[in-house]
Amino acid sequence: MVLLLFGPPGCGKGTQSPLLRDKLGIPAISTGDLLRRESEKQSDTGRLIDSLLAEGRLVPDEMVNGLLEARLAEADCSKGFLIDGYPRTVQQASHLNQMLEGLNFPAPVLIHMDVPDLVLIGRLSARWGCPKCGAIYNILSKPPAESGLCDLDGSMLTQRKDDTVHTAHRRLEAYKQITDPVLSFYTFPGVGQVIHVNAQQQPDGVFEEIKLAIEAELLAPVRLRLSS
Ligand code: AMP
Image 1 (cartoon, rainbow, N blue to C red):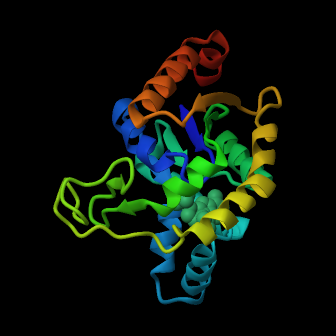
Image 2 (cartoon, helix red, strand yellow; image 1 turned 180 degrees about the horizontal axis):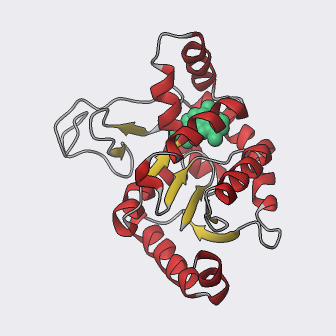
């Protein structure tokens, strides 16, 4: 099964992704993480990606497509995978479907995590994360037990460069202009399956809703035929 976690920045993709990875036993790939890793390299590409990320702009399609293609070629992806943060443009969506066809995977199931803008801005500017284990906190709704420290390994929490109110607005704008058409792309018959989830609720509730939707999806006769 190929799952795409899709939604605006701050909708909770990064929180749901490891939960689904553990539940389904498939790797979870975040293009944001792939790009952040690349941006740390002291190369022209690394520096370009670093500046685009800091400004909240999308990285050019060819760069993201290339990084993802290399990741999907790794052995752990052979039975299926979940992607968080990709595709973000129609070009990426079309490229992904071609890659999936080439790798003999069924059309993807896109999970659309919907949250109102005002909630997103609040969530993004209050988000802190553990640089060591990746745990995500929110100083308003999910603070760590000890201020500034990760509950799981005690590391000092950090804030992403692009999690400021100003950059959050820009990222939401980019999402609406460029990413919304991706949803329309996947509504064409045979291109993919779209599942809408209310991501404004607590993470546990979101996870339950996604789980139920995936179970229903796996039981659907058309999907069984596609993936057999
Ligand atoms: P994320 O961790 O998914 O919020 O992504 C962080 C940043 O990485 C985004 O604001 C973009 O600058 C960049 N990025 C992540 N995924 C993509 C993608 N599929 N296409 C273009 N840029 C991306």
